[in-house]
Length: 257
Image (tube, rainbow, N blue to C red):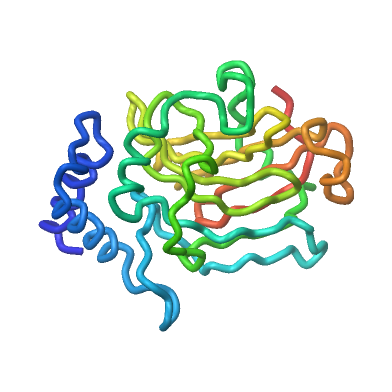
């Protein structure tokens, strides 16, 4: 994408997602935003794949596969990636839906129930086990819009620019997304369960590129039937969005503090 088109795209994104969003009154601007997002994303994956709207702000991605670790074939399931931004209805959804509120299906306020994850030290410790690798490249893209009732509110004091579901893993719905806060944009990983506190972590883009983003789910929060083999009391599941743009599902001992 040339600099002029990128400047135009940034301006249209501001009209769609900024505090003074007005793009819904301008169908031509919505169509132009869609065209520029498609240009930025590049050709669709697969010769017969329909053009799908990429979630706004999505960083570059990997190879699009889900690969269980050779040591253990985990039972987690991957769902399709569904584009959030797909025309007027989805733009309206992105503008008005995402505010600080309980996660859909939950009853507690985020301040009371959701605690940011400990440091990335969990993922670099010797002895952790990689259960699943989810590689991201847009190959999960689909033209279906996400129903209003299925989108969780990602934690953060601001508006979510985009959110993508990555499937159900050990009883938790896994999401990645981007939250715009007063301090700037944050990329987030969230593991959502209707009957327990959400696990999440959010970082600046530069921090993600340096160390990734990790959301931890403690042993006690995982239903016995959903716990992977070998997960012991004191262990946690980690959902790590790596700097290489994979999402790794890990098991190991949670670092102290």
